[in-house]
Image (spheres, rainbow, N blue to C red):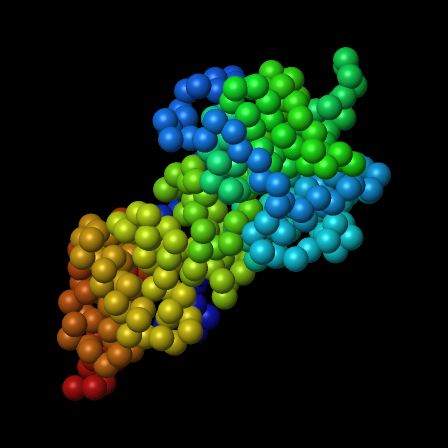
Length: 318
């Protein structure tokens, strides 16, 4: 997210990405808790595509299923090389998430709660889940896609393996899901938020998506700001995206909004100073850069370098 030219290397995002990353919590199948009263008692996403898996290739089949639902046409054959690991006869979770991003979708990992999974399905979002469908002590890891549920019957409906419509009791499903630490994710277009999105976790997902898809990345940040208008990271990221495209006035607007909403953010003032200088507003640029220097913090040397560059340019103009 840093710009390429020397003067642009001082553009900052304000929050370390690892500080945004969330960890999945693992809880039991408390189906009644956490469900909104308006949640439909029965849902089935009948229009979701079905790709019968080839041997050991449930990962590509499951991923193609959710990508199709997001409006991204991919076949399992097109995804095999991206996610399938022949030595393991399967697909690893990071590869599943990475392939989603490369295809143009934002993968969002859910918390390990059945209630959260059901809320996504009710919102029309099929969910990839990792299960252990082996017997006794022999594990057999398997990706399936949850496409429905029935609260009255306490059942889950999946696209699974070679079965288009596999219906499992909640308890049986949860046992198989729990062995995979109840790992699950949705893959959605960048302008659509998951039904269960949490601010820090979603902005982290948007940042991961932008690294792979820098052109589409800003759409994910815009979706985040629509839900959480005060998010500093998303605002600075949009400013940086505009700056990289040399849309300096737009970048200035984002940085100004960030600085006004978060006056204690040195990064916001630093970035604002840099872009104001390039827009030919040396006095305003110097004032913004001095605010960053006064705030200080772990990037105080970067703020000082920005101010020094602005003052040098200002002296030449005068």
